[in-house]
Image (cartoon, rainbow, N blue to C red):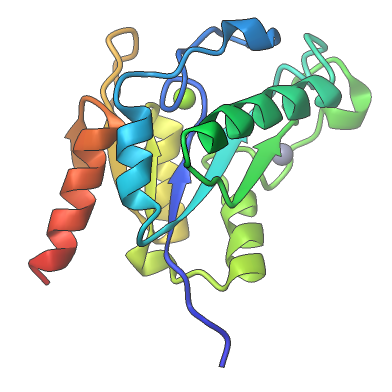
Length: 185
Ligand SMILES: [Mg+2]
Ligand SMILES: [Zn+2]
C-alpha cells in the first residue's frame, strides 16, 4: 500500500521570507525569524511543500525562470541548514495580467486549490491532517477550500479578515502548535 503523507503547505513571501512585493532579486531573500528552527521540527513528521502565487509573471515584472531561480535559492539555503523542501508549486497566472500566456483565470492561483490538488496526487497526502501556513486571507481560504487546517503568521503590514485555526508570530510558534495538537489527540 502506498504510504499516506501529511504536509505543511507553506506560503513563501511574508511567511518564509520577508515580503518584498514582487521579489525578483535573489540578493533580497531574507528569511523571517525562527523559520529554520520551525521547519526543522515540522519536517520530522510532515512533508514541507511551498505553494506560492507569483502573479508578477503574468503582470510582466519578471519571467518564470526568475521565479524558479529564487525558489531554488531558497531551497538551497534551507538545505544548507538541513531543512528539506519536498516540492515547490507556484502559480504564475493573473486574470488581468498583461502577458497573454499567463493572463488566465486558472485553477491554481490561491485561494484556489490547484497547487494542493497536484501535490496531494503526487505525494498521497491526507489533507485533513495537513496544514497551510501563510500570512494572507488567500492562504486561510485556501486551507478551507482544500480541507486543511490553517495557521496565520501575523504580519504588521497586512490586516487579515478571515479566521484561521490559529494565529502566531513565526513558524517556530506554528510548529509548536501543530506538534502539541498532535500529542493531545
Ligand atoms: Mg504571503
Ligand atoms: Zn495559476
